[in-house]
Structure formats: structure tokens, C-alpha cells
Image (tube, rainbow, N blue to C red):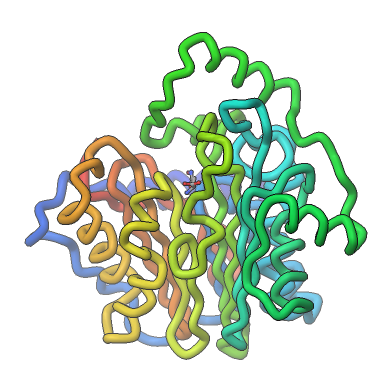
Length: 332
Ligand code: SD4
């Protein structure tokens, strides 16, 4: 697709994505979901999802498996030093150390995860190895690093000059006060990437990877590597993944909740809305933060919903890869 056509499509998709503030009783019913979509379909969080989706599609088109596709997809933002919220170049914790969280799930129900991992550009591939080659689901910190190094990963400095500068700047106030969408300024900050795929056979996998909240406390682990919080995939039903303030997602086990709501018959859209509403009802701190969910079911129906305006996601469907503005609970 040429650049102009692509931009027009983004603009058209964005135009339908903004809705006024929603009251709980007025949550929209999305109707464009009936029937089975043409597969494969890939959905991922934020604008870095466009390139990630493309890398995932390339794997599927070459005959690769759906788990390979999601892994290869999220490796793209992990390797991008300009992306300050995933992998290389991610914002550090308050001590200036970049610590990464990632997890992956495949169609067989298997899962792998790493958290508080330092010095490795591709935590998602370490999580994949944990899934495929250990009796465990999650490795953390030193143990995860040791496992990575034993398996041929290279130890690297992940703190780029730009991230170091941002950290030194932050030290002037040392005030941990994440703002909604603050990591989503074009060409500078993004956010966590979560990516879900359903291949032409209807098999599903998902991956999620992040450097977590910038300037977090040392040792803090977010939702992204927690199976059921930042990511959940059940090949009988569908998958979901989350971005935003991880503590709220963890307190409600958001991605598992979305998948269970789909299992009970809700559409991916309605399930994402209900998971956001769970946070609104239960956690008063929701007013300060952003949360975004995306979901995909086995038939290729997709949905997304966020607390605040400003969340977007990339959807690859029927040979088109579009950036779409999510509907949100608040109108700002
Ligand atoms: C976390 N959920 O560590 C991640 C951060 C994130 O957009 O998604 N930022 O809490």
C-alpha cells in the first residue's frame, strides 16, 4: 500500500473511533462483528503495532506458525532504540536501570514469561524459550538473565542516550506520576505492545512485551508478564491483552476476564468494555490513569476499549493494516 493510501485509511479509521463520554448504561453495542472474518487477523496495541503486525503477517505468509508470528511481530518494537517503552531504549526505573517484562501464549495453552529482566534486547524470545524448554511458566531477574545467557542471548546495554537523558531529567523532581498516554507521543514514546493473532486455521497465540512504567521502583513488575493480566489466550475462545497502568489490570486480572466474558458469549468489543467497567466500578484511582484492552476471538472478530481517549491499535484484516482509535469510557 502506498503511503498516501495508507494515511487516508488511517484518517478514515480514526474518524469513526471517537465517541462522547459513555455512561455505564450507554455502552455501545458493536454490530460489525457477526460472522466469521477472513483469516488471518492480527491486532496489536498502539501505533508501533502497524510494523509489528506486518512482521507477524510475513511469518504467516511464509508458512510459519502462529506462535512464531506473534513472537516475531513484537520483536520489531523491542529492537527499535527509538521506542522508549519496549526493549532496547526503554525508559529505566528510578535507579537508571532498564528492566523488561514479557510473556507469550500459544494455541496449545502453553505459556512462558520473564519479568525484571535486564540486558536482553528480546525478552519475548526468552519467554518463548521458558515456554518451550522449561517445566516453568515464569523466570525473573537474575535467574531469567542467567537462563538467557546460557541459551545464547547476548548481554547488552539497553539504556540509550535518549532514555538516560529522560531519566536524568526525571531525577530533578523524582516524582512518580504517570500520566494517561504519556508514553504515546509520536516518534518518541509509545507504550507496551500486546499482539494477538489468529491464523488461517483458526489457531491463536499472543505476545506482550514492555519496559514497564518509566521511573518505577526498582523491582516493580507490571501486568505485562503476568499470564491472565497483561495477556491471555485460550484457543477455544480467543485472546486479550492490556496496556496502561498495570496495577489496575493486575487487580482485576483483566485479560483473563476479557477471555472469560467472551467464553460466556460476549463479543470481543463488549468483553473489553466490561473489563474497563470493572476497573471503573472497583478502583477509584482509575480516574488518573489509562487502561486499554484489545481482544480477538477465534472467528476473527475483534474489539478494543480504553478508559481514556487516546488509545489506538493496529488491526491487520483482509490484507489491510490500519491504525484505529479506540472507543473510550471518558471523552478525554
Ligand atoms: C506496565 N502495562 O508495566 C505496563 C505499561 C504500559 O503503556 O502498558 N504502558 O504497567
